[in-house]
Length: 440
Ligand SMILES: Nc1nc2c(ncn2[C@@H]2O[C@H](COP(=O)(O)OP(=O)(O)OP(=O)(O)O)[C@@H](O)[C@H]2O)c(=O)[nH]1
Ligand SMILES: [K+]
Ligand SMILES: [Mg+2]
Image 1: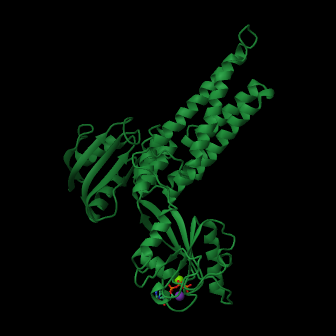
Image 2 (image 1 turned 180 degrees about the vertical axis):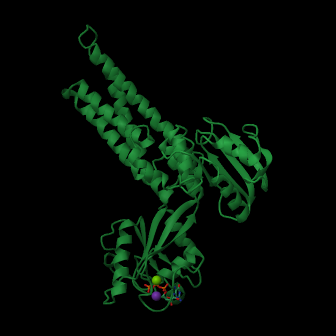
């Protein structure tokens, strides 16, 4: 960890009604005293004049001081709530910058200190990053549960079960020579380990849902040129994101917009129309379309004609797709192919609500009020899979002996500990904290 006392603007873009500047570190008290004359009473909002080094008043604002270790970062922390003008904020930041021992914070540095001081574990840190980034109600609920420790409590309870099992096995190994009832302790332990492996499996089954809620359902619009793909993207985004012309092959880059459907995030991609072409740029566009099809959770196969062979357009994609007949305002009279799921027109808006309903069917259904303790990242899922594999290895390797079984349980606990960051995660930290903005 880089030393020093850090400061940053923690509130959003300027100008704003109020701007919050945060300070954390060993010289926090000195800094607050220098700016405000004295350190205000702990954890109480105090109105103070904020002065520069020459004693000139820069602004008046609310000053809060939180002594460590019971602060966000675990260090002495302060918040200056000042007027959110650009010049005011710049003046206060530069007044802080000239104080000995103070420097601007790096992205995520407040949270990183909170983690290193044991105020949050890694899963909570990730939840907090997601909470700040949350744009839909379901993202907010999932991230909120994770940031406030819901998921961590679950993993900690599993870690406890593993520790208990290992302790019992150790005890059995230690007293193996004595005239104890052999195997009696282990029996209940193994049945619990069996149950734990199942609990983990049930939980990882939710990983797909967690990732869809967090990252959004990836919906790719594909089809022949001029089908109206970009028109559909623009219609659903309610703005002119993509260029629409009557020239086939208009779209080359893959574009996306984020939609909110019933509180869930949906990331909708517009792609280049699929056809044989000699145009180098268009061919590159089509290559990109194929790549985005590989990532799709759902494909909207759009055509103003009957698509006879969906496979021509879908390539290797084997997931769910909807066949959509576009431009129903022109072609509405013609009887659709049996295989058509929805008819739409982005000119009249007909059928679009129906299409949204069809997309909704591919979204998870999380009931309000249920705890949303779901794994949200590949990192979580990988750790859980490894953990479970070791538990199963411990259960299956009876003939290998108790100490080999105990070793598998130790490795299982280690995999779990890496998720919450309780064991060697140094190499992960830069990746995780770089997700944050400065000031958090
Ligand atoms: N009448 C009518 N015209 C439409 C509709 N949707 C799109 N169009 C027209 O069809 C033409 C092609 O639309 P685009 O949205 O550019 O089609 P695209 O599938 O993105 O085309 P490429 O990017 O070239 O593959 C444009 O002239 C649109 O105005 C519709 O619902 N009704
Ligand atoms: K076009
Ligand atoms: Mg287009």
